[in-house]
Image (cartoon, rainbow, N blue to C red; front, side, top):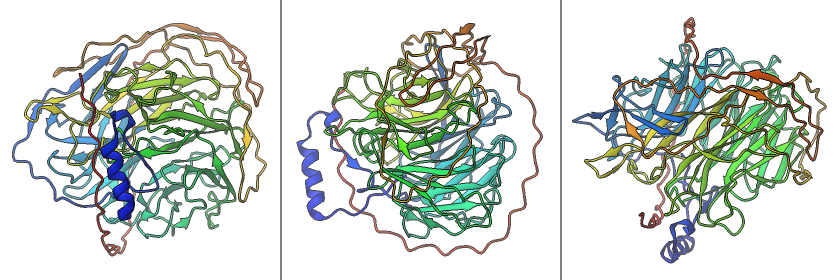
Length: 608
């Protein structure tokens, strides 16, 4: 996904010395995200498979949480010898049983050649179908998927030219239509995109951002599509150059982009929603304190340890239009990472002091990596990440979960939701398990796509990287008791031209809290037979509590009794006819970039 920038001979020698002098793997040297990264480039030909072995798909249970393998063949079996990682999930908001996951598909771990893989489900994630890659033997990477409010899915895919294609699915991800000729979606590495789902003038517009390793080769860029991803307007340089971060649109149609340039920043465009105007960035907030910096090269040797995720509250209540940012960062003086969170209640002008989401004691040997989160329609925040707190070797990881019902002021006790896995086995001739995982939340829980190594390949004597789906949800206990946090500190703005916006005051819908308590399963088990949908059913009475904050007065939540269940009836939806793809002139292929010398990989600590 990311790219290594050139190192001088002196800095390369210094990096080698750090590796040689490192002790515990938890203290392995890391690199700052914007300093040197590995290109998503074509460096190996497609892998030709002469024998395709299968085994039962993996279903990994951990207490009430069940992870289902998504990268399975047409018969629902695990494909032995392949690899899949870097997964993004989309959910149909009109029918939560319909989901799609995009991932980087490596047909063989002996090759680094990757393609655009995907899977879909129609039964809430219990069974998945992998029909094949977007285009056979075409190098693709950095998948990003998203859904609009009608349930139409989109898939943005990076080509070896650092240009992209946008695909669209009107049948829940079962099939995809390419919306333009190869490369004509512009873009670059690493790209993210979002969709305007408001009722304003920008409804349906798509926005994407990418860093300087892009199609045009000119700076950190923003692009807009006003026709649903079919054509993309000329790229615009983003002030402060925020990279490795995502985008979102508030209820008033204002676009926000978060990321880390020289510092963490959040920029706003209030006129990107006006189709007849060239987008400009009229508010730039820099020097946002996230409690550390993005890093890489530690527990994920050739990749990032996490990216920055920005999401906006659309609950319609007192927290509506709050801007939240979360990332796994390396605090000052640390090489390992914590999951840190900040929020803005004034439209991105200022942000709160950073709050540590992982609740274990500070330990410089423990990793909390690949942190990501989502905001539910009712305003609840769901965060997941990989965590090594329970590993004696400080590297075996579990997926952990925490949620907040008070706009991130307090977070629930962290709970593991997966069995432990070895993160550096099954490498597809590339020493990383991707660069990110993703989650999409609804009013009762979150849908997570993540990579893990639960399947064991006896022929290679190690585990394989595969893509999994798991449903996370609040697991009991009352709303966390609020504790005061530091007052939001104003951050310098280069061109802060605040625009007054109205905030809806609709009451937030209460969400019942389930009472299931996770208990560890001994080991993940493979299953060749269909397994019933997990049903964490519990009846609970939501207790309204007034949540004080340091910056705003909380609004009491109306009490209600609800019985949440995870079972839903599949409702057939009509399949729309894909729009005609316009004819476009193919873009010339950019001159290939030279490949820098890769840095040595740190040696993992012995495992028990």
